[in-house]
Length: 387
Ligand code: ADP
Image (cartoon, rainbow, N blue to C red):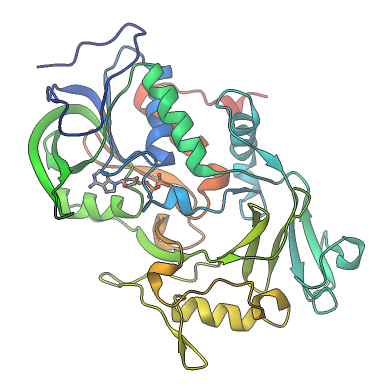
């Protein structure tokens, strides 16, 4: 049975297995309600309201384990090639508009360097906290004055709510698999009284178009369920908290290969992603001078390398924990298999599109989700192409 297309009525939400799900067929099914899936669902409802749409999520909204909640939420064009700046600026306009009622905080990104270079200014001209960063060691800085910070989880929530208001249905606590031939297998999950997550019931629905927006699991799902090959990979990133005071005026600092992002009156340390993590890698904590910590070895090495230039990392302010579960961390997709990979979408089978955000989704995620929605809708024009 095909879900009738709602005429501007809000969509339905099934949050738990007590609510019976009719398992109708849909024109479009979007798998994964991270920021990429929710944005694509919203734009599809806006561009082709005549097509019914179901958004499916394994956890809640937004899921605690997803990349969306752990993304730094720093909009900056510093890492984006100039050819993609029109898209980046469109994304900025969307995020800073009142539409979704999210906090979008203009805040410069200061990228510190040891040597002079094009467009670099003396870092002593900037008011930087000397106990956080040693400007004598890094006398030059590139500043992105247009940069801003926001919470990607808030964007996912706001776009999901807007998509539902625009007629999208949402099925939560449901693990999805690609069944091939336009089928999606939906396993509705429930928690037993011994706290085990089990499959309560399984449904099969058909969809003319499937968007795979499963974050770090997306390319694996395409490869495992459809037998295709992709060039994409994934990486685990930890983001420990640094309890050193920051204010609304504190810039985002990048030095020695790590980023300090002001948040909630302190900082979050965002290490660089160096490479893909091998299949089967399980994050485990390393040891610092013999003492177990929650930071994995790679992150510890980054910290030690940055200590000279970011003295705050050598203080008690860094929350390194005792085991991995103490430190916030998440799996990210690496589009194209490299940390520099920009958000992208790719058709992996007839009617099946893989949508990947990854490390640069703060700046280009929304526009990439729009681009896929427009591709599915058959719309040639992109708003950022207009003069
Ligand atoms: P992105 O930034 O690409 O949106 P996220 O990791 O934040 O990445 O979002 C991916 C979402 O997909 C997460 O909320 C995750 O819970 C969900 N997800 C992952 N695997 C499945 C699955 N098999 N079925 C349904 N949802 C899934």
